[in-house]
Structure formats: C-alpha cells, structure tokens
Length: 235
Length: 385
Image 1: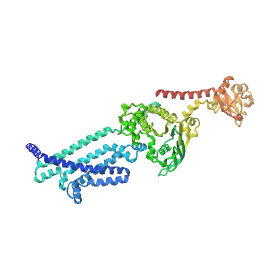
Image 2: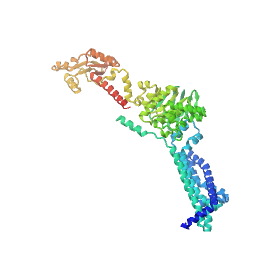
Image 3: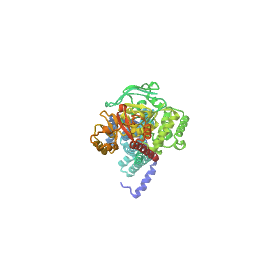
Image 4: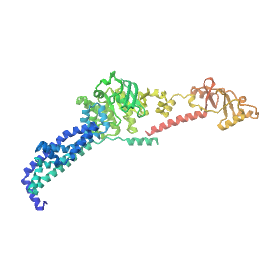
C-alpha cells in the first residue's frame, strides 16, 4: 500500500470527492475527544487537588489512575462496552479514563511545586482554602496542568481512532472501512487527518503552555549578592 | 493592644517551643521579637494571626480573646509580611497590593485609589509599576510591595517575619529607614521578628529577647543596651555594641585601671623588691598586707638609697600613698587629681583601703586607643555604605 506518484493525484481526487464526509468524520472525532477531555478535566483537577490534601489519598488515587493507564486501549474499550453498550457514550468514557492520569498527576505536581511561602502569604493575608486554591494555587499550577492536558489530548486523539470498533464514529471509521475494503486511499484519508490533528493540537497547546510560563516567572531574590556584599565589607 | 497570657506551645513530637509566655505589646509601637533560631520568636508571631494555635493560655487582641474570632476575618484585620516576600507571581503589582481589599469586597475605585496612594508612599511610581509583574522588580522593590500589601486594608496591626533578611545590605538599610518613617506616619502597631540585633536597635520601640521559648528580657533598646539582664543578653548584643554604649557614658576609673599591678608585702627584703621590679619591668611597687589593704608604695630610688643595709625591709623604706581614689570614681576626676599633683599613677581602692587596681598613663592611653580604633572601624564601614 505505497502511495505512488500517480497515487497522490488519486488521493487528492478522493479527498475532494469525499470532502463533506471526511469533514463530518473529523468533526465527530474532535467532539469525542473534547467531551472525553472535558470530563477528565472536570474529574481530574478535583482529584489532583484532593491528592495534595493527604499523602495517603494521593498514593491511592495516583495508583488507580496508573492502573487504568496501563490497560491497553482496545481492552479498556472492550471492557467498557460490556457495561455501557455500543456508541458515543462508551468511547467518551474510554477517552475520559485515558486522559485522567496525566491531568491528575500534573495538577498534583503543579500544586506541590508552589513555593510554600506563597501559600503561607495567602493564608496569612486572610484567604480561606477555597480562595487560596482559586486565586493563587490553580493559576500558579496552570503551566503544569497545561502540560498534562496536552499529553492527554494527544493520547485521546489517537485512542479515538478505535471508536468504530465499539460503535462510535470519527476518522477511525474511514480507516477501518479502508482495512476491510483493502482500499489504501480510504486508510490514508482517515489516518493522515488524525495524525495531523494530533500534531496541530500538540503544537498549539505547547505554544499556550509556553506563554503561561513566561508570564509566571518566579520572583527571585538576590540572596547570593547580599552574602557577597557582606563578605567584601568585612574584608 | 495584644496580651499573651501564660502561653504554652508543645508540638506533637513533644518539643516545647513556648514556655509560659507572658507579654504585652503596646499600641502604636514597633515591637521587635529577637533571639537565636529556634527560640520561638516566629511561633510567637504566628500565634497572633492564628497560623499557629497555642497548647494552652490565651491571647487578647484589643481585649478580645482571639480564639473566639473567625481566623479568616482576624487575618484580614492584620497585615502580614513574610521573609521571602511571598508576592503572587501571577498577579500584577496592583493586584498583589489589592488582595486583601478585594477579599473584603471594597469598591473598585476605592481599591485603585488606595493602591496608587500606597505605591507613592514607598516611592514606586504607580504609572510605571502598577501593571508590572513581581519578577520584573528588584528584591528591594518587591519587598516594598510586600510591605504595602500588608498596609492595604488599614490593618489594626502588622506582623513582619524577618522581612528584610534576604535583601542586600543597601536595600535593607533603606527599607528599615522607610519602615520607621512609615510607622511614624501611620502610627500602626507593628510586631517584627528578626535575628539581627542592629536591625532591632534601629527600628524598635521595644525589644523582646527570647531564648528557648522564654522571654529573657524586654524593654526599650536603650535600656537593654545599658542594663543587659544576664550574660546571654550581653553575648547576644555583642561586646562591640556594649563598648560603644559604655563609651557614650562617662568612663569610671574601673574601666581604665590595670587590675594586676605589681605588689609586695612589707616583710620582704630589698633585693627581692629589686628582682620583682626587674621582672615586672616597673620602677615602683605597691605595698599591701595579707588582707590586700594598701599600706603605701616603694620606688626604685628609695630602695637604692638604702640597698647597702642588708637588714632593711620594704616596710622600712616605703612611703604611704598620699593620693588614692575610690573605685567607681569618674575617670576625669582621677585624671584631674593626677594632673594636679604631677603623679605618674594613681591607686584605686575600695572601702577599707582594699587595693583593687592602678591607673597609669599607659592604661589611660590603651583605653583611649581601644575606643578610638573601634569608632574608627565603625567610621570606615560607614564610608563603604
């Protein structure tokens, strides 16, 4: 199934003939991924916050999320199908489970990385735990959270190509149709947009993450300089 | 303003950090808590805004037991400046300063006006700094913002936990000066924790010296410098500062005297007296009895006059000391006396003529040298600043 010189022409031809269908599939793909990720954020961030409140809880939650992560994606979807049946709902739940670990872990690490002085300052100024979390801790953990979200998004775009196996839609439908019909054009028409989607997402989220980081440079103090000044003075 | 009553604090591991602490902090003063690390000074401060809860005892803030107050509301009434600045890096300077007013839901216009007023107060132009992030400011500027953030909501009290210790010496001096000026302007009560005695002396109205969870001494800086309660306080203040304070006071003869002058018993022979003078490199000896009572003095000339007569003892050649001064006399009085009578030295005695020491021209000069050099070094340090 090598795309040959004249093959590129027929591939383009195929794309333009099926543009509306492919666009539809891409859109469905994106919707699935967004639903799964949104759910993962909704559950993962609170779990990450919970992890920072107690070390015991952290080890349990992170271990559980790890276990989910090591189940092969196809197996996970198959297990979910047994409980939830076929369709959109099942694939969204599968994507949710798969995105959970990077989001929980990065929320947890991001919150842990905050300078304890900052937390102390917030508390001492009279913020309650909720205000401290919303106004200080989560904004400061955002670059980490963003990194986790980025990993989760790329994984989810890949896993979502398995959707047709459990009755979902998306670009995977084109790939499996191609496999069944031994039609390489169809396979490429599904695989290339899926890959591009993952790459573009990675780049865009990466940019966003950098932008946040730049804004959040930690204030550093000139402790060394102070020590040196004193040394020269006593000399 | 604040009263600590019989406060004890024991941590879960059984370590007792505060032992029956009783302390009153006065309204409108800067009270400095000072002591070596682990003495409980920071713990004492954090009790006030309930970041730490005492194991027993009570704390009254404006006659109200703080244990009965909502800790969140309490903290919003108390300004707090921490050692490592603790500005929120994701907020602009204006947002940082406005944290507590916003928690208190002030009117937006009111907040903006307050932020500008405070920035001006510490010499940061609001038009330049309002929208900058903390990372764009120098350490000294950041801590200025830290200080005005604590002032923003007109607190009844400000707590400062070693706020300037991480700054370079120049910024530190500037901020100390500004703090004193600021405090005189706004008349807030400030509780300030430090381990730097120079800083404490410079800014404090009252210094509270702590050690091992107990208050060793509390009082005005002047009082502590002049009358340290014990050796720990003396040691903590440092001998150099003690000296400079003593230099301000008029020195007494006791400060200046040589306390181990060469002495001899009257029953000794002349040959021994000469030997003793030779070994101590002096030309006269003071004669004392067994009870250390001063009987007189003997000079090398008196001895040489009578040296050939081997039967003579020191008792036979000595002369009574015509001029003595009592221990505790001021140095200037003693020097006047020496000048008047053209004396090369002046014995110091206690009651009952007990001999305690001797003022010589040499001992006066070495005392002056000590003062002069220590002041001189101080002057040089100043020049470096």
